[in-house]
Length: 89
Image 1 (cartoon, rainbow, N blue to C red):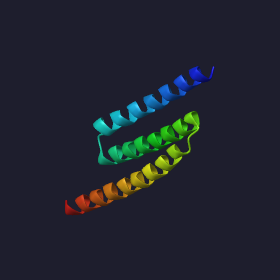
Image 2: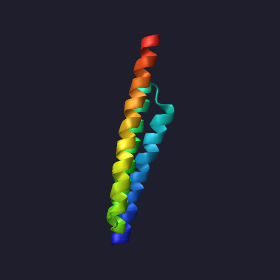
Image 3: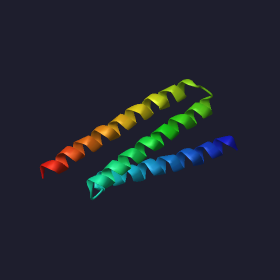
């Protein structure tokens, strides 16, 4: 029962990642791409937390925290880049 539940959960997470990547690639505006990149990062952080629970290893939670900090910095840098690019037009 647990194995089937894990397959269903990780399949749905993979589907969410797939849709986030599709929006990242074909997003008509830059804002759509920024939101999809942030969504992708949130899903990856959640996946790492699920793996931590599945394997009962708290080291994965440390990895998820570091990834979350780097994802936040990535969002800040991307927003600053867009802000600077928008002012030049």
